Image 1: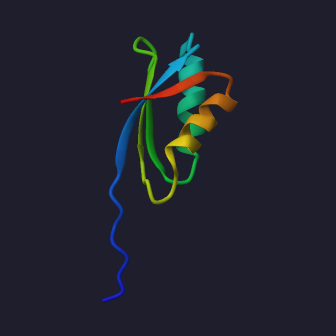
Image 2 (image 1 turned 120 degrees about the vertical axis):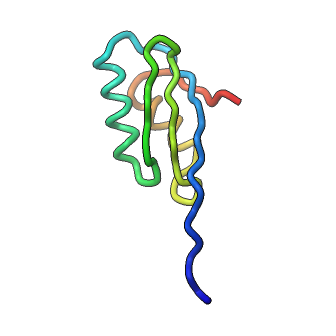
Length: 79
């Protein structure tokens, strides 16, 4: 009866342009992981990609992209 279903985590890859150092990686991971609905963010410096695990009921992909852009990087979802 009225139990809320556990939402399913989704994973997306976001291409980020402008990551130059480990400090950039830490900043992006920290900023994203503090957003509501994001379970994990893992940046690959060599691939210039962040893998984001998130709850689609709690946060939208555009919010993730906007958060990265606010940090001063270009970001686009890879499909």
